[in-house]
Structures are given as structure tokens and as C-alpha cells.
Image 1 (tube, one colour):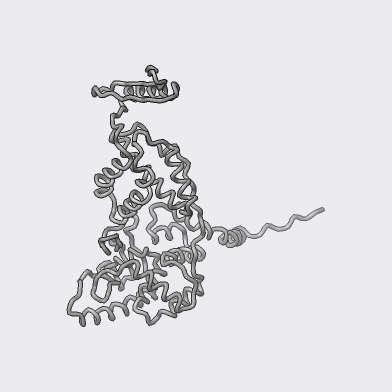
Image 2 (cartoon, helix red, strand yellow):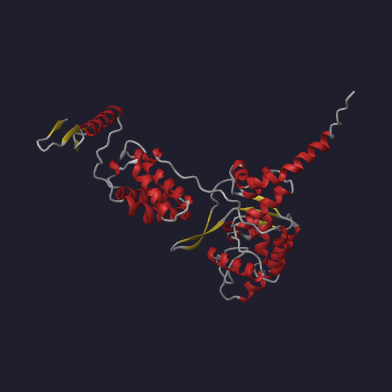
Length: 369
């Protein structure tokens, strides 16, 4: 390390592959710290000579080598959007080796100030952290700087739900609608929208009253709706059906058989809820039809996913064990179920206390001599 005639401090280290890395700076301490860091990296075998690689270069490689081959189509779409719309525009020109925690912290702050939700920032951080984990594995950087960043906690809000009475009113209002049985299935099974749209008749046993979840329909940008396997093993599950659902599906099958017989072209995907041509229904179309049905019934606007929350909430309030609810929903762990539906727990306290009185009896009042 030495100081040049122009006052700049200079440090240089020779890497095991014979290449040299050089650092310039006005601060002697800054340059000395860099030199010590490089020397320690060489001793630990964690050195890298990829000083010219930019964040954009790395993310493009990560996208083509990892994202495109290891993630599910819908997850790929999310990663690509975050990389293209958030990470590359903000950090693409920064050299990967020079990326610091404060670069990421500033990005997150800008997003929040710009009106993006905390949840969006959490997604941005998750993608960057996952990408930098590979950068460390590939020897492009020594550490994952995303580990040193404070990430905002997403706001937890109880899901907006229809009440039990509103749910009954909704089903009554759509009784003659072509998607009536789909709505009944959603409310009475808690299945995800993609699971319902990917459901096949071969996975439905109406005699036994059981549905097997073995396939999902995913809407992917530029690819349309594709059929895929469930995300996790826990998502593969059996769901017992109530009588109202069995009867609705029986009537739906009879109507579908008539439609199939009248069509000269029918895409035989064995889907329970296809279009009039047998092809998968797009997720956005279901959202549109659902919102129109809510408006026609004079009910508040809620998301289709809220029907899944409604199913779970009704079961928990009715005293169904959370483990059973977890299995019906396909959550990988019971703590996920309890965390999502923590808003239901306070309302279950009084019945729990009453149960203790019923089991143990109310203690007699103490008497005084």
C-alpha cells in the first residue's frame, strides 16, 4: 500500500490465480481496510477476481441459469418482474463486488416512500437475497450483503370476509349461474383458485364424497393458463365434501356432459371447471365473474381468495381442530394456519373458558366463619 503523488492512497493484492486487484481512495484507512479484507479472503479461500461484473450482469445470468430452470412458472414470473422492474433499474450499474448493504437499504426506503407496500419490499428483498446466495456460492462475492439489511415487516391485516349470512345469500343469488358449483366448492373446501381451476373429474369421487388435489392451473404471462403439479407435497391432499358440494358437482357434471356433446371441438382435459370449449379458465376471468356476482347480489367486494379464508374461519369458530383445518387447506405447517387465522383466536376464548367450567364444574364460593 502506498500514496501516489496526487494524494490518492493505493493498495494492491495479487490473487492465487496471478491476477491483481487494486483499490484507490482518498482515505488511508478505507484503503487499508480493503486490503486487509482482500488478504483475509485469500487466506480463507473466499477470494474473487470478478470486480468488473455488474449487478445487472449477475442478475441476468442468475435469471437464465437458475430462475428459468429451478422455479415453477408462476414463481419465475414473479422473480422476472422484480428483477426487471425493481432491481436492475436501481442497482444494475453497480459493480457486484462493490454492492453494499446501504445500497439495498436505500432501495427499500425509496420503494416505501414511492408508495409501494411493505409486502412488495419484502418480496424484492427475498429475490435479491436468494440471488446473492448464489453469487456467494459461485465465488463472485465474499458475503451476502442482504444479510445486513433491515427489512420492513409486512402489515398483518385480518382478511376481508363475507359473513356466514352473506355467504348463504351469495350462494342463493348465484344458484342459476354456470359457476355456482365452483363457488360452492371454493367455500366448502377452502381450495385455492388454481387448485379448483386445475381440478379433474378423475380426482373427484362423488360416491365417496372426496376430492383429491393433484393438479393446479396457473396463469403465466405470455403463456396463458398452464396445468402444473401442486407447489408442495402438503398441497397434494384429500378433502372430504359436504352434501351440498356433492349435489352441486353432480348437477354440474350433467350440464357439462350436455355441453360437451353439443360441441364439435372440445379440448378433453378432463377438467371439472373448463371453458365452454374444455380449455382451462383464466384466473383473471374468474376474478371478473366473481366480482360481477358479488355486485349483482348486493354484497361487499372481496377477493376470490377470501372464500378460502371464509372456509377456514367458519371451521375454527365451529370448534374444528386447527390440525384438520391445516390438512384441508394444504398448509405445510400448522403454525402457518394459526398465524394466518390468529384473528379468530380471541373469539374462541369464551367457549374455551365455558368448557373448563363444564368439565371441572364451578368452584363453590368460600364461606367465612
